[in-house]
Image 1 (cartoon, rainbow, N blue to C red):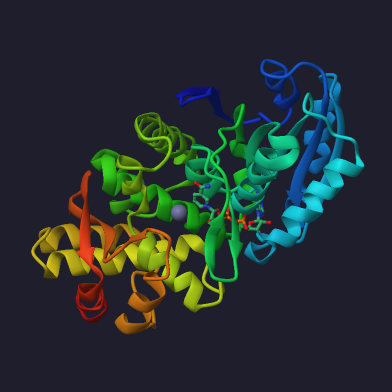
Image 2: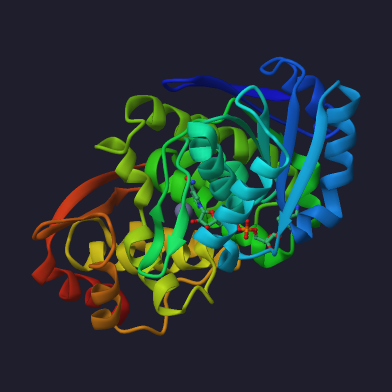
Length: 353
Ligand SMILES: NC(=O)c1ccc[n+]([C@@H]2O[C@H](COP(=O)([O-])OP(=O)(O)OC[C@H]3O[C@@H](n4cnc5c(N)ncnc54)[C@H](O)[C@@H]3O)[C@@H](O)[C@H]2O)c1
Ligand SMILES: [Zn+2]
């Protein structure tokens, strides 16, 4: 097991390793006194891992209940949130109890939100079971649900009390879901870490390297969150590929998954940046190669006009400008303000290249 400490406003440990489900109860005891824990999961993860997690928690002296919502992004909404809150209230969960998110980014985001607002805030633990949740969403304290107007438009900042990542759970991930996490890990490489990036550039990564990839990504994300917990500056770098990616998700009515949309967004931004002279052609080509090597798409069927219109309804817009993350070289990116009138022509350089 490796442990990464995140020194956010509330400091916590991220434990990464094989076989951690069996140790979840024991690990949770280091941050929680004996109490009730409600495990929130989706129906797919429920079938695979819920019983083992419940056993581990009850063996460690916790009293456990659980709630499962239908798997998929369509569940990440106010209705599911409200159902979870009603369930917690019916079960008489108090402020000395806790909830645990078991699953991917959807379970993590919605459970974190529920923890932030139920009784004005109770503790929660993240147990990510997708690579995307392990490398990205389980760390950093952003919680959310989607609104009809767009993704992640309602949520709170709330850091978990602990993150427990059992890398064995990643073995049951379908290839396409695994690739979504790879997209976020490639993003981390482009942002901060050429050595990490080269793993993807050199070919398809093997499952054996996932624990290393998770540790590196969590360490980088932790450093950014420590510097800018509430997303006022440096943390916005983590949005590389996301402005266009969120537009793709929205235009596809969430038919394109988050990770695939981010991969397409990174491809488009990389080509647009090279065509604008912000980075060399080789940087854009390397980003494309790393994505393609790992079965990820680098372009989409939407036009620049559609993408910029959808992107401008995104919450990252500030007045007449929008912040974009521009790769300068592998391992170095910068935030750039683009005038909203220029967004479509910038994106066009990436969709037509
Ligand atoms: N909070 C953040 O900082 C942050 C960061 C990145 C992404 N996100 C959010 O994360 C979400 C995407 O996360 P995701 O890709 O994990 O989606 P997800 O939670 O929907 O999981 C994807 C699918 O994999 C299944 N699954 C989960 N674990 C499994 C396992 N071990 N074996 C087999 N199947 C398994 C799930 O049931 C689901 O069908 C998006 O809503 C995105 O906005 C949040
Ligand atoms: Zn993301």
